[in-house]
Amino acid sequence: MSKKDKDYVNDKGYDTIKIHACDFVAKRLAPAFPKNDGKQTPMKGHPVFIGQHATACCCRGCLRKWHYIPEGKELTEEEQEYIVDVLMDWIRREMELT
Image (cartoon, rainbow, N blue to C red; front, side):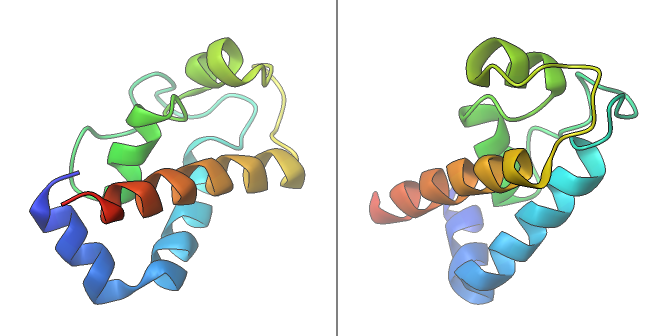
């Protein structure tokens, strides 16, 4: 994660970043057939986006391959919470690195 991303996390705080993660997951991953699936997560612009690529939570194909969450069905609340937890764990670990 870049210094700019770390500064953003420090400025906003973990609670706000988690709200952003929940929103991104709900809008970009949770639908059974997300718009632009496979290309819906930018490679930069927000720490959560970076985390999604780093943890294979960026599209439904990666979720299927790496997290065994099937494509073609809407994500459950539990699945969404799991994804957000993975993202927040990654962000916290990255923040500990200098």
